[in-house]
Length: 196
Image 1: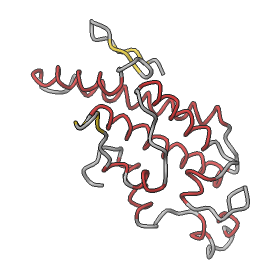
Image 2 (image 1 turned 135 degrees about the vertical axis):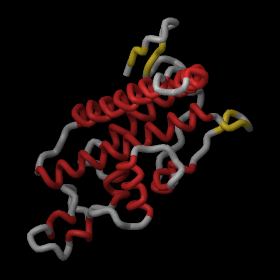
Image 3 (image 1 turned 180 degrees about the horizontal axis):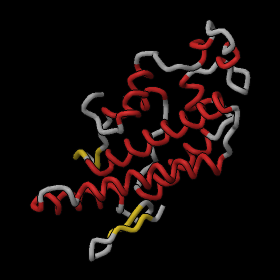
Image 4 (image 1 turned 90 degrees about the horizontal axis):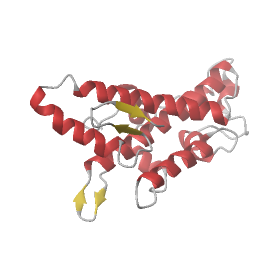
């Protein structure tokens, strides 16, 4: 978990998931005035798996489907079916093309999954603590904005590298984000265009 690439806040959430420390569900059972927060609006006791995969009353299913569709357009094979185990081990996953490890494909997969987890968690927290359910379109916009920020940050980081390292970093960026232009593209003059 320490060595996988993800934003610190997402790494923290993943650590809490793997160590049963996520503040949801039965966490609220013995907190006066918050006992009802242990239940999802669908009536189930809220667990992280319920939040990420099972609840049909939030935008989770639509968001995972959106990610899957984008992945399938970008790559030749279907996206791995999401499960609690895949999510918990996301920073350890390595994807291959045939027998060879594919860094760009792996990093894109990790980025899409971790940003989806974080978006779903933020949407859940908004519902629990603000009392407002965010719709499918709002969730998709939040996810798009997060991915755009990641693309922009990675692109900006390239110019901060030593000159001799920039070309390789630019090629790695293109392999990750610009394969088929579903997320971004880079012109011959090295201008970034985010297409998401």
